[in-house]
Image 1 (cartoon, protein in one colour):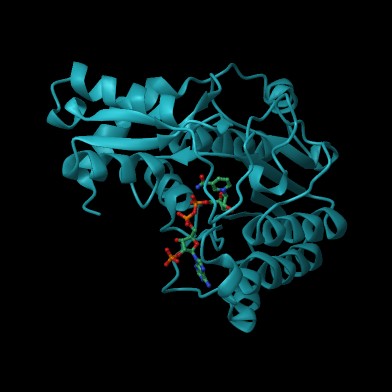
Image 2 (cartoon, rainbow, N blue to C red; image 1 turned 45 degrees about the vertical axis):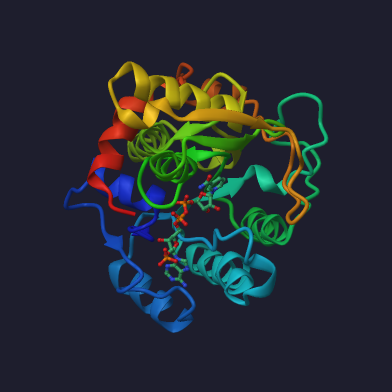
Length: 290
Ligand SMILES: NC(=O)c1ccc[n+]([C@@H]2O[C@H](COP(=O)([O-])OP(=O)(O)OC[C@H]3O[C@@H](n4cnc5c(N)ncnc54)[C@H](OP(=O)(O)O)[C@@H]3O)[C@@H](O)[C@H]2O)c1
């Protein structure tokens, strides 16, 4: 069962795996703040495994919106309770925002968590609930997901490129972008290995995942701009300028880099490279009207 089939990750799972043994629930079919409906649907469908793609992700509004705690904490608690009761394997997503960003090297799964904004706190509470309650779960910790759909960074950049000749982009934060299609490939691999018994409850835990190489938002946007130019898109003539001023209106971790040795070893996979997905991003952008 995939809960949240219309978000960036949920819609990509639907795109890659629209088969009979996958059940997708959109927001229209299940508002997760309706705890009784959540319980009813899971009890009627009795899935072996749930991928939770629902989250409150509006980092800037999180503090002033009660939906943030309702979704990232209360719903996650209800979901974990139902999974525990029904022996369901849960795949859930965490974020680099659980860290304060002060570490000089990429974060490993066991690093101390110390969020610096409200969204990060809410996600950390959700992670802790799952870790405490469940014995069968994967929390996949990701950062900087992009797709060219929904409201992701590259979609925003592309839309700005259409409007302005020059745009300023954060050159302070360091991270590892991750194309949503690469993330979904990993989720489907986990599901397939779980079905075959190649991974089990003993592998339960938190796993970082991201693509290579590490970069800044500026460099990421600039590489995308270069790609557009090389492939004849007029947006590629935009000048991308470094912004070295920290955002004073919202604290975000300056270091979002993730060490992915643990998941690579478990799944026996190689690195993926974010630049390789620019063609897919452009295809998505051309299909999406945002
Ligand atoms: N995007 C990133 O860069 C990033 C980075 C690190 C971690 N993550 C984590 O990765 C996971 C997936 O993120 P994403 O990028 O796919 O987020 P997303 O595109 O914002 O998707 C989240 C989905 O949850 C839905 N939702 C919110 N409240 C709901 C409710 N009460 N009932 C039902 N559905 C509700 C949203 O619907 P509406 O659109 O209608 O509100 C949206 O479709 C999340 O756990 C997120 O914290 C994301």
